[in-house]
Length: 140
Image (cartoon, rainbow, N blue to C red):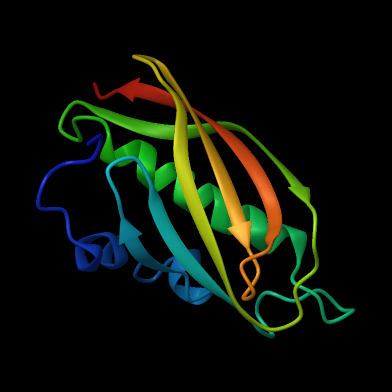
């Protein structure tokens, strides 16, 4: 397991209060041995003008998942994680419902981490695949 023991979804969801995560109603829904999962509604906050899930909203979900997961793997008293680079390939449009994102680590290094995020349609089809590189920063 790469995450701390006894970590609750309530604690993780509380971190997002009064942030973009809260505004977009992103909810963390599952923690596994090597993955973190969250959902986001496809609604007026997350759609583009043609009625489809906005690619930028996908990136917000992906960055939220990768950033939180990375932060959970370091000692929060001595380090924190920030995004260096993110990319996203949008593969299937979504018009309504909840999308589900799942992140898993590709690389957990001392100074950088790389996470893959897959976002699925309400019908469990792959909608977006993203990768984020995180910098692990020592607190001063």
